[in-house]
Length: 296
Image (cartoon, rainbow, N blue to C red; front, side):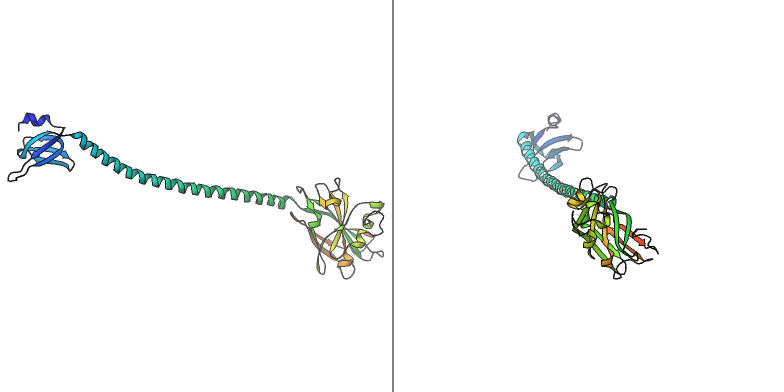
């Protein structure tokens, strides 16, 4: 085969017929003729089996081949391979999206729960810290002979920041020889100066001969409203900002000796439902100069 014909086919798809010496049948190789080396007597062919060399003296015939059909088949194979890879990638991608969506949902729900709980805890903490009830003054009331203190009067008010104090849910403790816990008797709530009576003689109701002090016991205390513009204390037993009230305690029903004798001490606390409690620790003077005594 002459050189000029071989070189014309370089870079083209060719059908090359070869026959080795001593073989009866010829072989056909289809591929791109890459190069012709006349010096060494080889041609370089890029076929479906890969890049290879054929001896020139074994080539019987060579001609351009139908390259379109070969490319179509090869292209289809490449598409199938890419499709398989694409499906796998899509599955992994969808799985990653699902995992991310689930994780995001968990994080969002957890964040909302924590936010709601933090808000609730924050509000409760604010109420506990800023709210409460304060004892402004403690007054004692002696018997006729001024030998023993039979009753105590606690002047109380809401602490700064308190929106509402429910007196019916407050507990008053008295510690002398024993610890006594008192709660409000809701039938013993009245306004100050009712029927022009003094605090310790305030009647249960207008025109009644029964006083609040007479009806207090070893388990209940009474309340007298001394400043309550909206009437919340007498209507709902609730104290708003600026309200003041007096809590009456019957020591004669609590202490076995009938009350506090001179030089004795008594202590305890007043605890609201929510907020800071108030504690008191009072010492009785050695001499009772009057029936009404201011206690420290």
